[in-house]
Image (tube, rainbow, N blue to C red; front, side, top):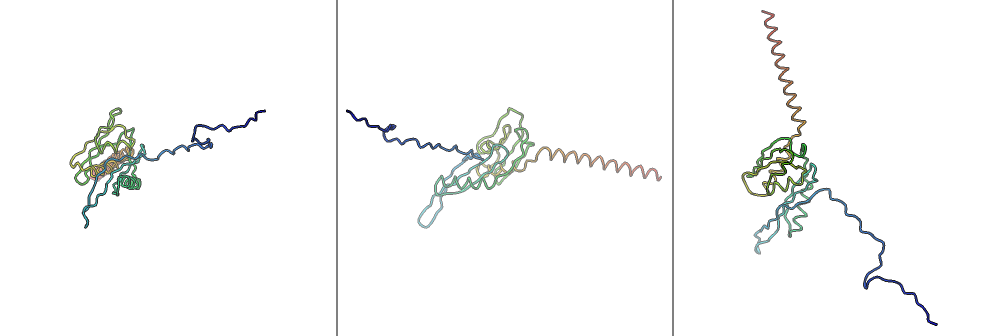
Length: 202
């Protein structure tokens, strides 16, 4: 009589049985992170030169928030991580009007000068280099830009951010214009009433 032995079925050699665990889905990031530029900088010390890295990073939520950060680190990863934290601490809200900006703006920061203009639907992002990288994470789809003056990437980035920060929503400046028109009409009515009163006295 042959004795039968039950053998436990196993998978391929070296594989472990499935424990039933599933990889948890990765949480979507709130902000998009984009490295614009990385430079190697040197500092002269007593023993020679010490090299570090400087990173320029932009973060945005592809809606109406954007921020930039500049930081240095002993290596590239450390510099990027520090710059990302700086950018998240300096997030600004920008005014967007139907996938473009409400009005044109020209701003100078240090030696850099940036000009941004609203564009019609379907135009796309007409920009280059640093300006395009920043606009790409803001949620703006149609815009015309021009970078003038200095070619320093950090100055161009700050000039672009300040130009976006200075944008005023369309509703605010339209209301201001209507209020100014109302004030002018009121002043004219007052002047005409005063003139009529003087004529009546005569």
